[in-house]
Length: 251
Length: 251
Image (cartoon, rainbow over all chains, first blue to last red; front, side, top):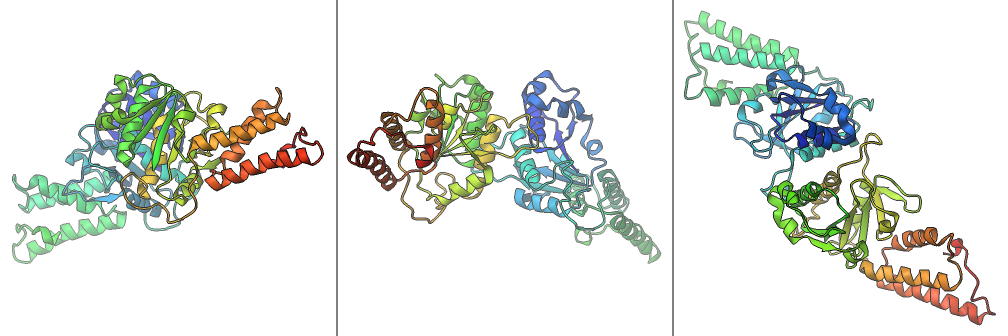
């Protein structure tokens, strides 16, 4: 199941055009982050897709909006060093490889700023849509459409009934549970004295990117928590090395 | 070479978004039919694609706008009985089969009405972009982008230098010359008493569709004109059958 998340969209007409693009391609779940209400202008540009806007859910922040999703693909025109990006084609191939029941989010940032680094942390993967020159980037609703259209053509639209893949891999956890594991790992790193003021932001990004990319299953979670907790415990029993900060390479 | 033609676009923001989509995908030749000037709002939505708008050419009517083009693909959400439509995919495959030097037009109609039947006559082929439901149709600029993006990805953008095909077939004539042949055929049909008030519109559509679909080369023109002229002459010499109207099947 595919959800579209718009983070802090500025222009109501773009929200309407994105809703229209979703309706055109058969997708229904629209999530809007950081806006108080959907303005009338959005309904004007949505044309016959008012039902998508009426069904849209508003969230105060991105982690809440993405909490139940299992895999989140974030569109970015501007790759960030800590968050490597796939091509659109590679992202579509990854999406196709998940079972159709997987709750997948497609995340698009603000028209002017794109996604902040903090917003990137809620993503499993990033992707960029190829373009001919550096400027201008794709209009927000256009980027939504260019991502949804090939998914629609591949039969991934809601209610199409066509399983995107028959792969029977274990499903990723809801994003909120993945986030909780990552936060726990960061807390353990903090307890070990690994995080300090000068590296906190960078290490947080890197840890989110690394463990986010796992699209963590329940089994992954158990293993990770065991490794971090027991690893710490074993070291404590192993001669007071509990306080040692692991190097980044050990992650 | 790919040109984008917007016939009677109503909303200046759509003109700007279409220009932006062209810039995103590396296409430059924009032709606008039936508008007097490009309004300021178009420049606002074009963002960093003002140069596309500044280079756009305005034409009073579609045959003039398409005169130098060799093959014209018209986008239509609503197939017309006399003008069968391809899928987007099939249209893209046809475009890819022409040599890169072919002057190809992509024609998009008015936001509310789409293309009129008369405008259809300027097209070699029609195509429809698949959509999930009947309503709403794609936004005008979105339809432009969905057509241009795969062409861009296939390397058909201006200046990409990649030949779209190595086929060495004879090039189609400019559309104005193709139109002149079709008009000549219609005139011959008129002289033969084949056209009358009740069928003129339908036969004109059918003749335009049939001979338009040929994407007529210079050789095709010679053959067609010979067939129609000499056919008429031969019949005249063949015992006064000149005035006989050929049935549609003979076409």
